Length: 518
Image (cartoon, rainbow, N blue to C red; front, top):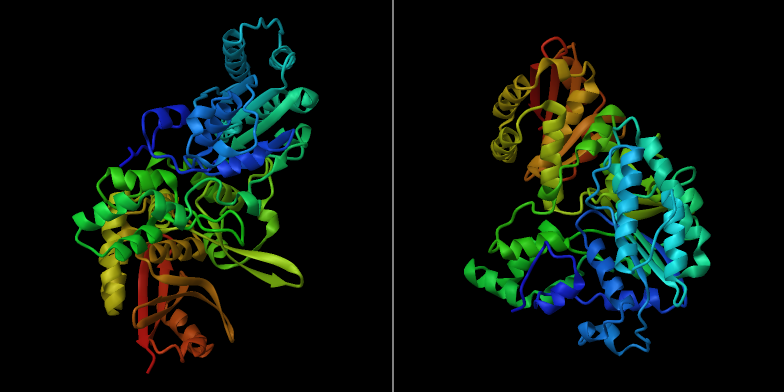
């Protein structure tokens, strides 16, 4: 069996050291087959962007022998060697405009030294322009920029972020101004900032992020996964003494599900797949553990982002568009960073609407635990332990025991972070039920208004109405008086109505009442 890795992103090293490489060179060929190509591609972190850039660099270095056995090897391509400017900002820690300018200048100088080209420009724009002109004297230049947006995303909460963005805008504008000297250009990143920001001066790139032709360019389709990892799949199935198909089904549930076009295939997370087999078949949150989305959680809380609506209501295609640093959209960022993905579509008055959701169990469980931790400051290990106990009670319909356990949870939330509105408590309930793996609708529509939450698990359907500084009887009576239950009478499930009252002073569940519909 070929070796596995989740930490090597250099194509040449993968091939020479006999590591497994899932052949994506058909996509590479499609990109480079035109005389000139200028592209932008966004994908979540640790999803194969750096390997894609490295593969392109190897192609443009003319190293055909490394591609033997791969799709591109027998293509009608001249394998000419081109000068390559490869800039990778993944490791930058610049936190000011001056530091970023120095960082970029050092990177340009290193490339110039490698090609034995003197750089005399005083600004990074002039240095970049000079490097392009000098390297393209014989053959047009190839420009590959990996993680172009890291200097921005790494400084989202930095007061100097707009100045940092201005530096990048000026630097990247050189690419458009030297288009006649280029053979190929690719910028990759996690997000897309546009209009008056980075891409306003770089609007000649073709964005292939949600292009159906490139939806499976990064990540593994089901066919690619089963073909390339067949021996590892068989090995784990044998070690765990489970049917092969059962293992495949669980792997799909845990690590598949990323979708980059409504009609495109689902793809597996490459980091999680490699780590799963390297860890001898242990189901863990491998990709999620490589980076905590702290700035996203901070932004969600600051903007009072409605997670329930995001996960239950369709959105327009505008959510896939770029955005501005001074008007960050949590939903767009969650989508572009891979925490949410396309789950389905519907047509309404000729407009395509998209349903979004967590791609798989790895992301759903991990993100929800982190989100609850961020909103409540309750330690993640406490949340995970609580979720197991709550799930058992929900499954058996033990409402009183469930509510008593929830009281202990709310008691752990520091007083100073509890918000004095019903929405905060409704959000906590929504997150908890998601973590339990329970299907839940927040603000669910009924024939006579909206009920705060509807949760369905096993043979039970729970109808929940929340009140703040009132009483549980009022909440329960609202469910009955407005007959919120009618919509669920023919589901074949047992229906329990629950009225819950919170006290804003203590931040606690003050009382609750329940009644099973008979």
